[in-house]
Image (cartoon, rainbow over all chains, first blue to last red; front, side, top):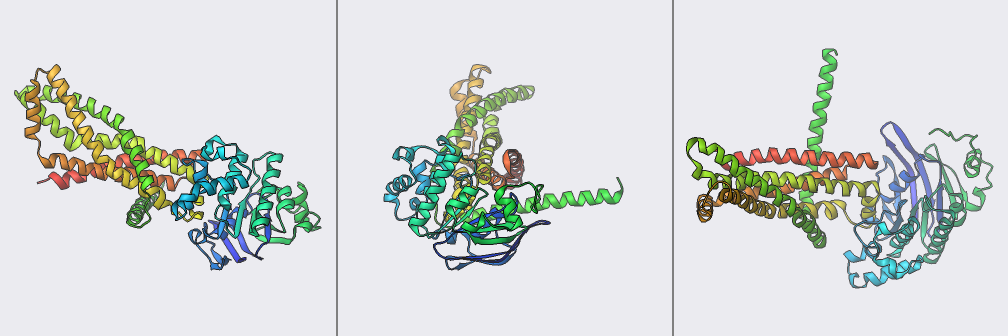
Length: 243
Length: 260
């Protein structure tokens, strides 16, 4: 279970989060949407312990306000740009944690197995991240996120910068991985296809707060003016276009 | 500009500089603390030894070779005024092992290594690789800074020793081919005049310079701003700080080792 209570975070004079709170039950997939610069990534960083909130609490995997190192065994994270380590071949990226633990001998086999799970051939294992396309890097990032079979998964803009076909592939992979593993998942996105494909629940971040929360099926038909403007991509509405 | 405005600007500038010095020293203390905490990453240390030590050898060697050669020519020209040309081998050797070997070697390594460390870690920061390390239960200070600091501190004395030898060889080549010295006599004068502490002090300086170079690179890399401009700024600042620190530390160490 993930619970955020009254999270606030400011950078200098700019108040980004103003009391964000939500509860996500085990096995549910939450998609957080919101305009650029509304604090979606800051929220994710606060949940992961990469950023310390000014006030409020995060409870995740039974830990209260944990540091990222303490969460490592419970959480897998797919970064927006995949954040693969350039100096390591693909398989060492995927098996990064295992190479520093007791399962070292099986690390390569497990990396190849996880790469296959995200649709990548064993030949990719020995390539370096710079030799891969954006879509392949995202898949490798996903393989790394699920390498330790964590019960909680985070995805930051998983389809950003991908063509529609590759975006659909990544969305389908995320959905199947989350379903298969029974994982609790939080996805940050402003891609409506990701919202439909990946989310059980949707939370709309607006003015530093959760403005709307509900089932994914209702998100696209909501009559709420903020939701309607965002999901339909309208210029006119309560969301300022200059941020 | 009114006196009050000038005073305010001076105060802010001074506070900024003192704050930066404080942050750098804090980072150094933190890095030293992590050096003694497991786990260590021997593969990373090995890779950095290769990158910082072995791959810096050509540039350090070339610098030392030409410096030793030029030094012998200069000392010959100066000592000829007093009829003391016989001192060329010994003064060339002392100049190389005490000062020029460590300082020029340090500056060359600062240009090559501090910049590359700052650019690499800075790029890792802007592409979220440092965050990825944290989410994989690895502390970036331990995984990135400690191996680089250890490797640079161990590699620099070896580079200085190699640079000293090559520099003396440069002086020897010029002495024998251009200044009319007898080869065996030149070498004998060099070896007989040098004392253990002349060489050892240069190696100790090398270790300190290596530590400072890696620390400056890591500090600016870890604190790099966003985007290409941020990484570029970090790279430039790392080289400038490492160079200034080498020259300042050289003076302080020379005072400590040789002032009577």
